[in-house]
Image 1 (cartoon, rainbow, N blue to C red):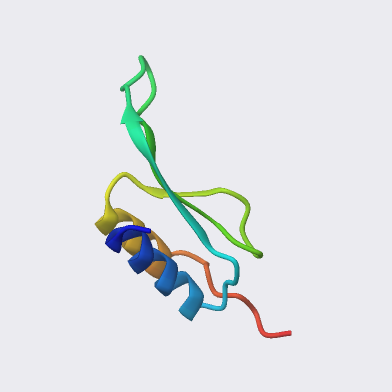
Image 2: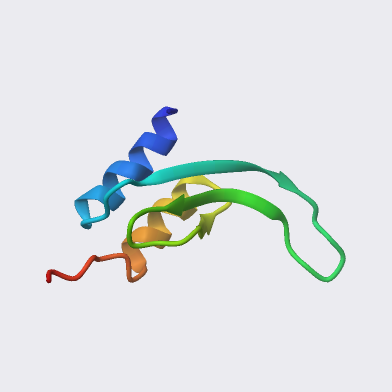
Amino acid sequence: MSYKSNKIKKILEKKGHKDVVIEWIPLIGPIEMAGYDGGWFASSDELTVEPLGYSIDEAIECIKDGDFEVPNE
C-alpha cells in the first residue's frame, strides 16, 4: 500500500469504517462531453465503490467535507 492510499485509509478508519480498500485508477480522457475517468476510489464495510477525487488533496477534502461518518449503533 502506498503512502497516499494508506493516508486515505487511516482517515476513513477514524470515521468508523472497517475493511477499507483504497484504489488508484490511472486517469483516462477526457471523453467528449464528460470529465476524466479514474482517480481515487474507496470501499469498505459501509461503502460500495465510492469515487473520492482525482488527486490526494481532493480525496481527503471529499472525505472531510462529505458524509463518511459511520453512525454508532
